[in-house]
Image 1 (cartoon, rainbow, N blue to C red):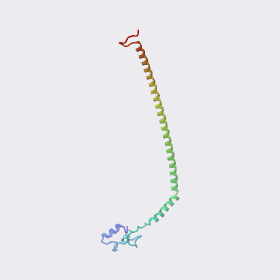
Image 2 (cartoon, rainbow, N blue to C red):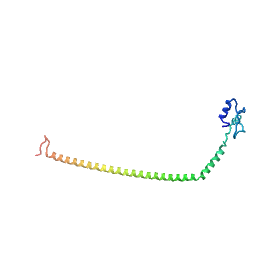
Image 3 (cartoon, rainbow, N blue to C red):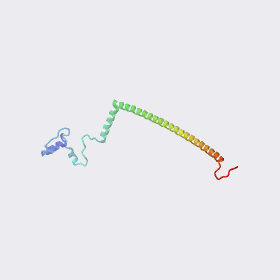
Image 4 (cartoon, rainbow, N blue to C red):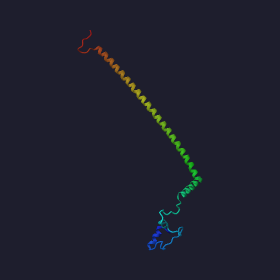
Length: 155
């Protein structure tokens, strides 16, 4: 590459640099002095070729945006993206609805299970109370008939 670091290095290896006239540059910047010599005396860095600042970048950006907006492929991709987003939204809503239905069904089953458990426990308590009542009445009958040892009989 003319004017590149490799070319300058090759010239200095043989004892001659570009400034001494050993190697000449050809191409776009052949007539201009090297950028390093422009920036040597100034406080600013040398402008790079093709660097046109913010305005150039803005114009370039607007050109790209204009090209994209005129592109049929861009509109096709936007439409496909909208369809995909709509489908994903629908799937999300269905998923939420089915999740809610599953949770509601689970809650209903749990409520029934707890009600059945409470009913079984109430029946168990009733049977226990009935057994205890029978024991007490039987015990009371036996106590009336049989006096304790050491107590006088009622005759």
